[in-house]
Amino acid sequence: MSYFTTEQINELQKKLNGARSKADNILHNWTSLELRSERAKEFARHGVARRVQILRRCLEIIFEQMPPATQEAPSRHDLLDATISIQTFIMNVFGVLDNIAWTWIEESGLCKPDGAKLRPTEVGLTPRFEYIRNSLSNETQSLLNEYRDWFDYIIDLRHALAHRIPLYVPPNCIDSEHVEEYQQLDQRKFEAILASRWDELREILSRQNELQHFKPFMRHSFSERAQTIVVHPQILSDLECIDSISTAILKDISNLTN
Image (cartoon, rainbow, N blue to C red; front, side):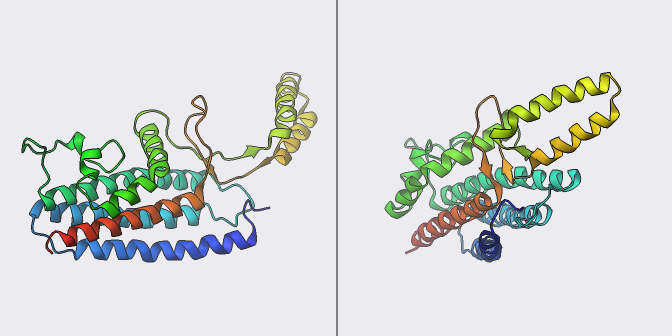
């Protein structure tokens, strides 16, 4: 049985189609944006635009290799391809935020209070970059503040992926009420192998397969008690956040010439 209901599957497919359109609009808006700064143009056209195309394709690959309607675990090959796309997606979500910030800085001429240029480590849109956020419109600042929990989530995944434990999609899951039985079967399996009881081993493996089922979850570290995330709705939500932030800062940039 699929993890999602039929209604949820249909809604996810509808949102995927909407995400494609949003990504195309973001791409168009940033590549056609009239900018005075050559450096801002580079960040907009070769930073934001490239990354958005990658995000769009990653969404498609994840849905292709790990379809919401699947009732069985994807093959190891398909699961690895989906995992690669999930990891790439998260890194580029974080990267596109930085590219948007850079475009704003270069086009607005934002510098430090002493007139010095901002260093790369001082650029971003996450909450710790308060100086940059305060240079944006009140409306955009309010939007970014509303996304505080989302920023915390994307920061955690990106830093874990880059520096600690990469994101992982388990090939199978076991419900909590069956964990003890599965562990007991594991012990029996080991004993059956040592005693060459092959018929018993086949029975044990069959029962373990019955207890396993696939769920489209992702997480990084188990020792850190990292959050378990349902993949499909989350990545669609991530693109919606990028779309909202993109729209707000594009408006701020257009207001620079007014």
